[in-house]
Length: 115
Image 1 (spheres, rainbow, N blue to C red):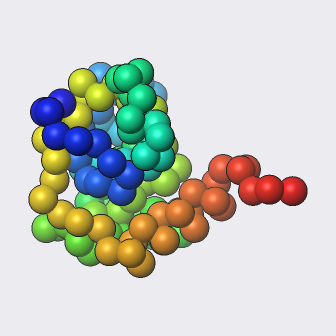
Image 2: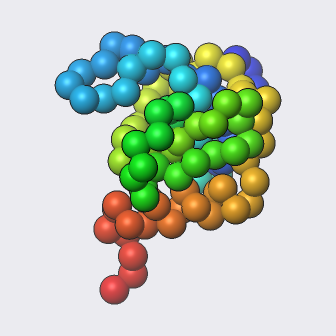
């Protein structure tokens, strides 16, 4: 990872190799979903949502139009990765609507709601 500051909702190019089973592989965009608190920790990890250019028509893989190519946030592939997998920051900036759409998809997949 370069020396750039890591922050929530940034898009980075990440290397997901080696891959196991049905995990996504290769160099691809990744949305940082770590909190600002976690981004400041010296643990060397980041929680990310990988991107894909394949539209599978799944409600939990929302389309991101802010990137140079149509990209879908694979919210069903959330990963905690080493920051060493982050290669460089993507020039794209997610819109507030895209951030909210990813949050909505994650809430549908991860049971973190208050009861």
